Length: 214
Image (tube, rainbow, N blue to C red; front, side, top):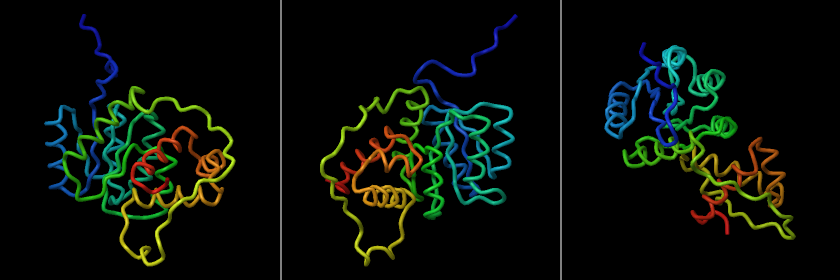
């Protein structure tokens, strides 16, 4: 009798990708590109179709457009998390909305990629998601020590606020605004955002590399 294959591979082998994108040409391009990158893609045009596929098959990674017909991308993601809590999510969208970014923070998204997006950037995001699926990235950070002086935080000037922003930029602004409100207190900031102190330190490390904070 043939043994049943395991539903998950060894560390580093997370390869099953659910692609939810309503634009046909982009969906086909993503499916072909993801397959060529060594992953096993399953395309879906709507959130409803994606959820039905998830009932039949476990996925390691989700590439998700937020602006979908029918149920929204965020609603679809919330429901998928109930079925498959370990799925790693890459948001790929041209739909910029502050409230959506705030909700996505709580849903622990791996990356925000704004359309149009280079295939190399998608491949990098897939690799981060694949490694994170088996806890191979983001080393444990120590608990923060008390900070005698709050760190200054840089914010966009008022004349910059009318410029279109990506979801990644909206997430940055929201996190930095809460950090400033709490006068640099990371523990209080993580609690208000509803995320772990480890995740907050990871995000702040990214912002420091980008020159957003000293």
